[in-house]
Image 1 (cartoon, rainbow, N blue to C red):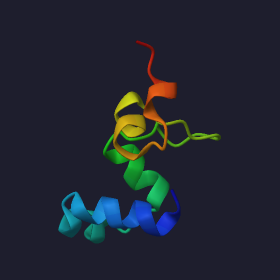
Image 2 (cartoon, rainbow, N blue to C red; image 1 turned 135 degrees about the vertical axis):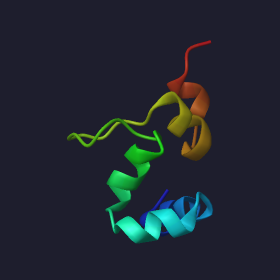
Image 3 (cartoon, helix red, strand yellow; image 1 turned 90 degrees about the vertical axis):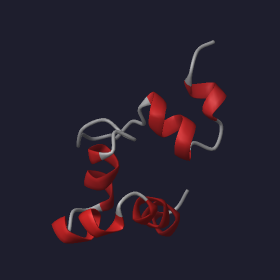
Image 4 (cartoon, rainbow, N blue to C red; image 1 turned 180 degrees about the horizontal axis):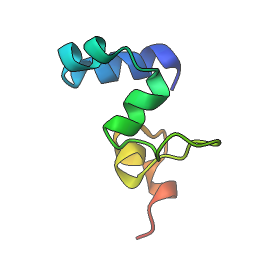
Length: 62
């Protein structure tokens, strides 16, 4: 998923709030708990993998 797709998804999540704070895409993803807190490298949470992951079943053990 590229940055434009992530930005589009984040705009669907309360766009007025996300626009006001002018955070980076990485910070916005962390704020809605789609990724871990800002670290290098950034890892998706289970929620992030399910919502924006390409192959979410690979990320979650059954």
